[in-house]
Length: 137
Image (tube, rainbow, N blue to C red; front, side, top):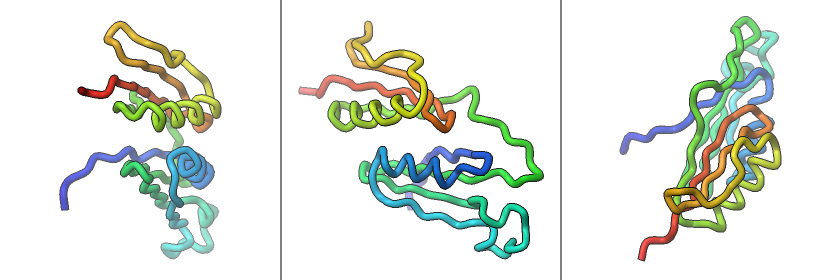
């Protein structure tokens, strides 16, 4: 199997909702395992997500989990998820759904390097960078 680099996002009790939202943005259904599924049925974290995974129609993989109640939660900071390519229709669609759920930090617009680019933080606190390049001739 070839190595892959995938974002693994942590949430504080809303990993299921976040991954279901990403499934609505990118397509396909997500798979989930709770802490109860792995033997912690009597835990206060039984219904929290131990592992969630979305394999999107475009071939992206997004993984996520909830922190346990005895762990300190730290929101995403110091990094962003970047999407780029020349499929303007798909990328604009992702942009519209992600940015509509949260806050636009840089509107999608033509940039000095010739591409369209925008930045947003989705409704789950995850920062996104989207770059739409011109198709190569």
